[in-house]
Length: 276
Image (tube, rainbow, N blue to C red; front, side, top):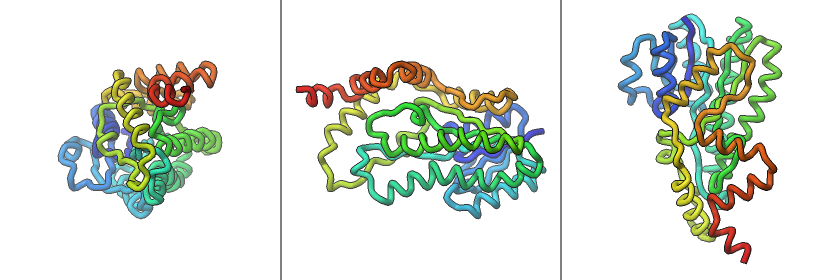
């Protein structure tokens, strides 16, 4: 029986992924910052709910050690934990910038650093990094969030070359808009002293809500993650979600055509004002 460790398993994609793998007969190490609040996953057979904060290296080491002690090994790690700061970049505070990268970038690196000795020792293992469609396409108000997801895309692609030498596989899953608590958990750029972007933020977010018509269920994303973990392919990237396919398709064309499309779709009022 194989074993998977999932970060950010308390809700959304992470929780759905834990359920999917448990139902498929895997041992699941469902990690989260506050395991004492989890009442559902702990009832499932072969699921170990444990504390892991991607910003706390000791908690990562303890979770990996406890998981190996319980199940004998770890075969796959899914780096899912992450969050977003929305709003114009200039309004983001230094603390928000640091925290965004600490979780979304350095947190992923912390987990990978901690699991690699185990994977190298057995010359086997799979790392699945959950990025976002926002790791290859961009939306207004997401500049800070996108910068972290673009970083993980590049890191993962290059890391995949390195780890081939150790028979370790790296894969990327790129979800689109998903029924989860991402937006409710996302913070807004918090510098209240800057008001110049109020109209921009409102227009962009309002149009985002209007265009957000192809939302996927977390369970649908979990199916793609399961496919990536079990298909035995050398494939690096896995798209997840109808809107991801849409935006990636547009991006394949001329670069300026894509930029023009996104401007017209999400900030047409700003564009019209600029062109007057």
